[in-house]
Each structure stands twice: as C-alpha cells, then as structure tokens.
Length: 370
Image (cartoon, rainbow, N blue to C red; front, side, top):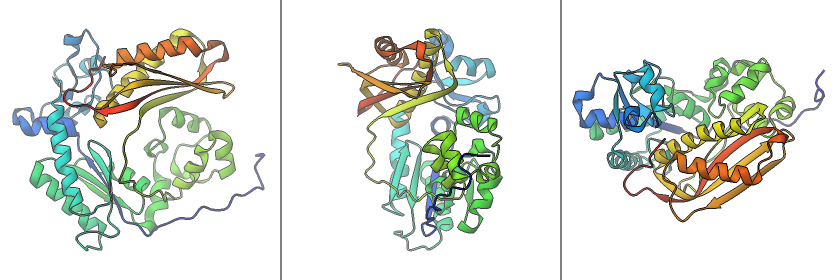
C-alpha cells in the first residue's frame, strides 16, 4: 500500500479560456538551404560540418525530412549521421540567412497579435485570445499565419492550436510537415491520455525510462497515478506531470523574454561511478549545449557545472573566461576543470549539467562544434 494512500491534494485550477497557437518551422535550417538552392530538393540535407573535414567531430544542427528517413536527427554526432547517410549533403550552415528568415517570420506573427513569445529561432507561441484581426477562431488564424509565412518566405510551418502552451506544443508535432492540429478543451484530456509518455514535452529519455520502470507507458497510465505518489517518485516535477496529463498549464506567455542562460543536464538513475564516465557524459552534454547556443544565436563567457550526488546533495561551481567559449571542446575543458576542483566520484553522481551564462548575441558566425 502506498504511504500516501488516503491523503489528497486539492485539484489545481484549469483555465480553458485562452487561445494559444504554437508555430514550429519545418526542418528550418535545411529548408532555408533548399529554398536558396533548389538543386538540394529531394536530397538528404544535413546541417553540420562534414566529419571528413573535421576528423570525425561535429554535431548535427538539423536535417531535412529526406535525411531523417535514414535516422539522422538534430544533436546527433556528424560522424554518426555520415554512417547512417553517407550520401547526405553536409552543409556548414548560413546562419545569417536563418536569422533573416526568422525575423521575417516574427514580423508576420506580430501582424496578428502582440502576444508573441519566441522560444528559439524557429518556433514561437502566440496568444490570439484577443488579436489584431478580430477573428474569433484560433484555427483560422493559424492557417492564415501558415499561409502568409509560405507566401512571403517559401518556407513551411506546422501549427498546434489549443487553450494552453503545453498542448499546443505537442499538437504542432502531430501533422508535420506543413500540418495543423487543433485540440479543443473538451478533447484535451482524452488526447493526452492516448499519447505515449515519450510524446509529452518535457519528459526526456531518462525520465521516460524511470516511468517505464513504474509501468507508466502512456498518458492513461500517468493519469491513474496519485499526485502524491508522483511527487514521491519525481519531486516537484511530479506536480507538473499530474497537472499536464489533466490538460492544466496556466503559464502565461512572456513577451519580454531575454535568454539569460543556455544549459543542458542529464539524470543517471543508476549513478556514475568513475571519472571517465563523468568526462564522457560532460562531452555529450557540451555538444548539446553548443547545439542549443547556435539555435538561439547566443554565446557566453561563463560556464556553470552542476553536480547532484546519489544523496541528492547538489553543488554548482562556475568559471568566467575573458573570451567567448568557441566550441564544445572549450566548454568541455572548462567543465572538466570545474569537476576536478569540486567533484567527488566516491559519492556517486546522479545528475550532471552544464550551463552557459553571461550571454551575448552571435554577430556573424555560429559557434564551431566538435
């Protein structure tokens, strides 16, 4: 019997009054390349330095749908992408063109509503509950935005429409590319309960693995869990899981959003027990951090290492350098130095994280990758 059986927390408030659109550009970087070079159409395009030029280093920023058929995806090593798709066309990336297209798309969105929250260079949330067009249907507005983006940029986008950010984000992935998915309030919970748990935004591979061990494979399984039991297994995140599978996400859009940091972290339920394991994991995290920095077009001068031990003791340490970190190797070097100063492998490492702060926009070239 669960220790929490018999206890009950109050049900959280569910606001269904808003109309939220999530616009996600389809394979954005590679689509810009295909638009500007039509000879690429129908061919597998991978945005990364060719591993033969870098000695096997590098990471994929994105890949078009032709390349994805071979299993290539963003944040994959370029070497692995080459193994999967040796005939793929590797392109270093024209980040000025990507930024220009992104600004144009943002301007199109602003014609419909001032409530636009960009999440990265290729996606944004729009609150169209009240909008400049005085159109009551968010679905009609989403289709008009997709149409305008296509007419003016020759780029396709996918849209999710619902009453909150969380569901709109999931919905925009359902009918890619160039699709639209609408989840009204009276269908939201049924929609969420049918989803594989891996489709829930914010549940990564490690958390999904832990959920599987708890026999949580779908939204239905998650829905059946008591709130206090979820808190017991996942801490504060358990509250979020409980709310979201019930279609509850009342977080407003943030229009003055200025990115203060970019970071990635991983949880190891079995724990890391050797220094070599820690370094290998830091290397992978550093690659993912650089991919995210390029995605938001930022670079920074401060590296923060976060370590959580098996005892759940959590420590952080940072180092600031006079130059912008130039690549994943640089970030890794700083992170390893911090680990050597503060880390204690004997305690068993449960979580590692790297965050870059003290950010500035990248003016011209993207940060080089491994």
